[in-house]
Image (cartoon, rainbow, N blue to C red; front, side):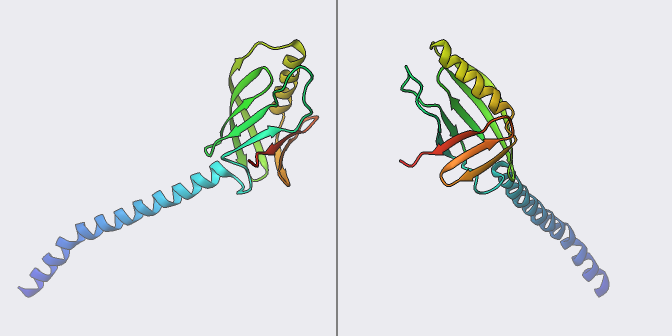
Length: 153
């Protein structure tokens, strides 16, 4: 008789123990997914997520504007060129980068500035790698590089 009570008592605790194990497993999986998602989104830790950068180019005659790249923590970015603003997504894994361009907002400007925007967007579409040189983000992979300086203010 004593045996049946003990066996019954053990089996009554099994569902609770299984629920506890399932909860621990779920918490562990959530933690692993969060770490992996953070690593995937941020790629290599040196990439300047959450920063605003200025394109390293000489000022264009007739414009005081310098193109900027505002990169958010989640990889979304706003690229403001001379005539066009473009929403982008940056996918960074190690030293590789893929730039997906989205909707454009155009501003009226001179044809020479519009050509500069077209050239910059064409170069950006060919970018495959990135690196930091001191305070400059260098995007390369196409026929030319794009250089953006980190804002230090």
